[in-house]
Length: 535
Image 1 (tube, rainbow, N blue to C red):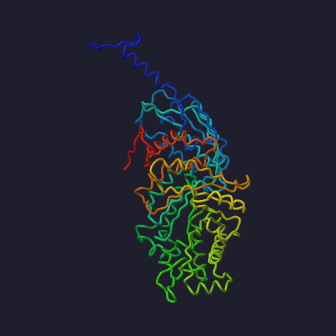
Image 2: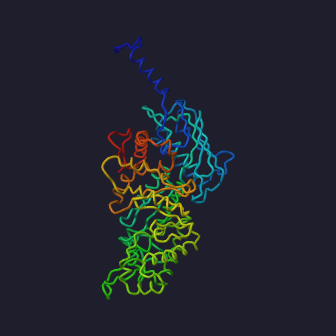
Image 3: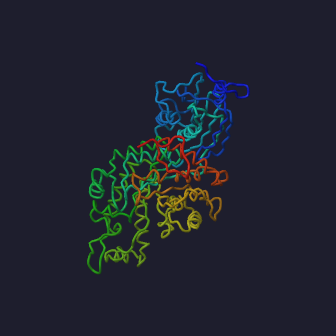
């Protein structure tokens, strides 16, 4: 059959198609969508093809970690499929004449079986050249961060072929503490939802999961020592609890991503669910001279209270390996204490007068002593410092009150206290429009203070409180809005000062999250090349 030919500058259409097939793979493409932005990032238009069938991870000869390293071996398996999301094995994708590519990982310290901690280095260097990439880090945790960056450098052309550009990166986090808080008391979050959140956290290089595990509405943590706390205090004693196995699963999953798990057992307020399974723990409230039948905060005058707390925190300390533990101390309603004649008599005996902040300070001192004896670094909400400025210097203060947080940063660091900033990142609050821009524009060190004071700001935290959030809307409400704070806490302030320049990179990163199965909500009008295919 005759074929009609159309000439283009002397070439027939089949010739043009052939030229396009030859020239398009040689086209120039740069990747500037790494999120959060590395400290130094140089990328060339020179690119190298990748074939999943000839792509290898390897350990450097001088690396302290070698095959058998649990953290890196697991990371290699995860990142192979994150780098090649279309690949399902057995040569489903065909790449002819593509040379092998090897990424060689070297770490200075063999910490493969341990847990990340407050002093863990996350610094890495990544160099990508023809046929190979070298990733060096001080620790396996830095290597995991570098693998995340490499995975974001890989892209596909319109024909589905994979490429990576010649790149040089030297990267490290600006702040050591970069957290996400999930509230599993107001709504129970299934373990799978927590694990999915940990995955997404790692994609944004967050490194602390603050597990606000219990509160007034429910006590889902299943204690070995006090099983009645969950059997009577959870929404359901069988279906809405976290067993010891569940907790270990979360901690194990987080460890492989280089994420610390920071438990919070908030007292003396926010403890209504505790009282259901622990008699005499809460303070009986009075109406006039008779009990009203309601209960207030933990009773701070009974020796049995501290005996209970000592046993509980001893268990918590053994279950959660992190060196930090959060003991709360916020929003204590004094009205019940005030109504109770025994409490008032105790205060008079202790010389507290009618100052109930002194009573709370007395309680918190006892709890801090308990956690200190367990060799834990204690974190408390800022309220504790507000009424007790003599709190031990090794305590970490958590700033949550929105108004005037810069003043609080200045005041607390001036007193020599380490702080974590959460106040501007309560993203359970939502508004119409691109509210991620507000989070992005926060500058944690923009307060009146010396350089020494500013070194005491160890990081920040995004909080997702659970009054209106459960597993149905957690992910789209959290991502990619939390990622705005992630870049603020990781990247250089000057290089990320423009929210408008950040927008296309965050939009690109959001599409990466969607392709990885994270139901991240859209930033604005537009589309992703690979729309969400999950269920």
